[in-house]
Amino acid sequence: MSNSSSISHFLLLALAGTWQLQLLHFCLSLAISLAALLGNGLIISAGACGHHLHTPMFFFLLNLALSHLGSICTAVPKAMHNSLWDTRTSSYTGCAVQLFFSVFFISAEFSLLTIMCYDRYMPICKALHYGTLLGSRACAHMAAAAWASGFLFPLLHPANTFSLPLCQDNALGYFFCEIPQILKLTCSTSYLRELGFIAVSACLGLGCFVFIVFFYVQILSAVLRIPSEQGQHKAFSTSLPPLAMLSLFVTTGTFVCLKPLSISSPSMELALSVLYSVVPPALNPLIYSLRNQELKAAVWTLMTG
Figure 1 (cartoon, rainbow, N blue to C red):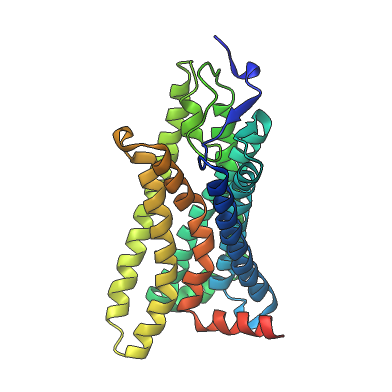
Figure 2: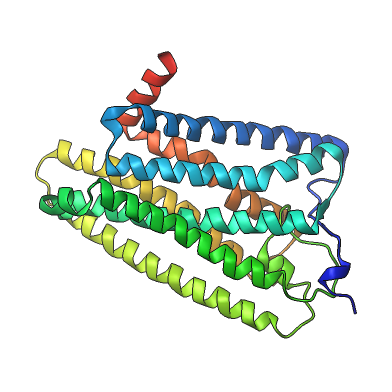
């Protein structure tokens, strides 16, 4: 029975069976990655350079774009390398590093989405207290707390996961390293400790989700009481993008974690992993720019000089 010290590399999910399909996957991944990098980079540049965008909403959006850039740069380059060079291997150290940053950026993203929902709740439902409760210092503290929580979970999960002895095959069912796939390879009953960490994280995530649902129920009831149709449109234009991004993130992540094993297949695992890790960062600029006139104007000004 071997342990983790005898495993020097992992075998990732084969993205395609032929070289032509692998090349197609590389081109698609490159196009999606460039779109995500360009879109999120424009949001960051517009938020940093546009002085009229120095508001809590755009400050948190800038941090969300940073987390999406980190997510796309963590998951996709290795898969593109494997597709281009027709290989499936990932070193043990490389897998651990990829897993650490993947959990880091995903945890920070969920925390930032929760804060953004609170940021939309305050000006609509508590307008008189918005300026005092969400000043520049408070926003900086909340963003720091989101990134700190993102750093805490990688210290718990990947460190504990890679401390477990591995005695099964070294083949993973994803195109990048994921905790559930590595736990399938362990031969020790101590993996129950990691399952306990996952249960605690799930409870914390569920608590955040309950708060988010509460915020949006209050937002919806307040918006429907606005007598002006223009006021309703403005409130919806700033509240719907965070809700759309959160729904995409939560639904794909929940289905990946809770789907029954009976419907699992390599092609489905590939589709879900791409949907979970690549699509949200790529759609983030599109979701926020469609309904936000200030952001579109700032991006256009940035592009045209």
